[in-house]
Image (tube, helix red, strand yellow):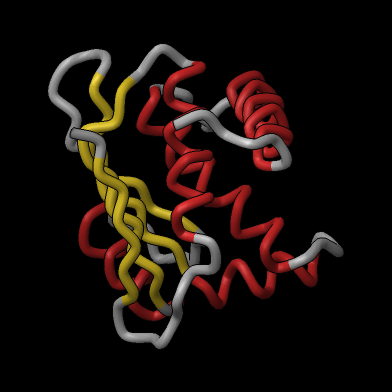
Length: 145
């Protein structure tokens, strides 16, 4: 059974429209011919995410998202997606976009990583951005399910 949950860790944050977001994420997975087993979103502070970044990835920089892929097999998606709300807020200002739009971009970025898309090389980043845009356009549609 597909489960998508939303949590907050060390901050007070409640996601808007959780049911609509869940249906949207499931639709993205369906279009990529994947199924969702379990995805947990954890919204947190910069400091919390920095500690994860240092502890698990040995990176000493702030980031907006870290995705842990716990999937077993090729089609079922399972993982944890940690998102710094502070980074999303700052990036929304930096990129002159609304907070919700930036949050959606980061949320779907994590799902795209679980699906298998990378973003280390320039060509991978370009494809990731194209996929993000396609997924964001689905947000405006009424998802099935």
